[in-house]
Image (tube, rainbow, N blue to C red):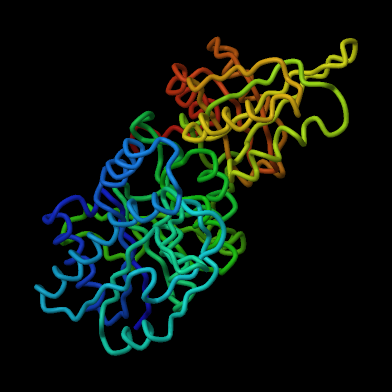
Length: 426
């Protein structure tokens, strides 16, 4: 018998018929003798609907009240799933974020899980109850509801798995694993048997929509075994315990998997893209110590994440242009904050562009192989795709390009790195 956390995303919970399908998947796991906790997202599209209500009510909304509104989506699905499980003869109950409680810290709408008081839930699992938990939400130090940011249900699931000492955390989505790239763009994308925490962390951070970045980081920190698999399966499909999806594992386990399969590690594991970036250029910033700090301090204070940064130093004029990217959703706030600090920063004007995309190649194999970046740059150049910015890490190279060229770039790079599946495999 194992203790398993199962997480279901918005498409899996979109309507009563799909919730009943999820309930049957959960019931089968419990019938196999496992203790089961389930974390659910809001129905597909529901969070966007609630966010729009907040924006219509007040464009400069209070994040604390925003959390009250958007957290309601998961509360609905957790209650509906518990009711459906009960109708199938299972003992089940919902556990809201404040009932465990899942304690959070930091900003509203971008809160982080600090701790979970799990003894009561563990006792319920041991009594044979199924715990149904709304993802994405917790309770702040002030006792107010707080949400974890978009995709936060993945983080909720991993946090619950760590808190209850789960043997595995299964993330059920509308795809059956982690692919070399988005299969909707590249038909010959291949499903990975396993990827490392480090690779998945980079893929998630640069646009792969399978898992939220913080959930992967938390899984790596806590050593939570994660599997990504599809909830849209037939009754005769391979059981989850036989690992039909993609495992997210440590470097050591990956080495063993490759050894058992008699395979070599690829230079590049996957190609990710993200159209939710926006570029900001500040022109004629004074070229002096502290100038750049004045730009990014207010953004950090507003919990706006800055990604790529480029500074072009014009030594003759004592001025420089500073270019950087922020999440598209934060562009208006970032622009307003910078305008407020115009005199302090000393820039001339702000130029923004929200029609860009970030394309990234990721792979642990980059650590021991040269030429990955040059392959990327040559492949894009050969197709006339202009690079606007570049950033790198030990296992990642990312570039900013025009949004209209996103799909072409992904296809070109997928082929350039030899990731296309063979016709037989496809």
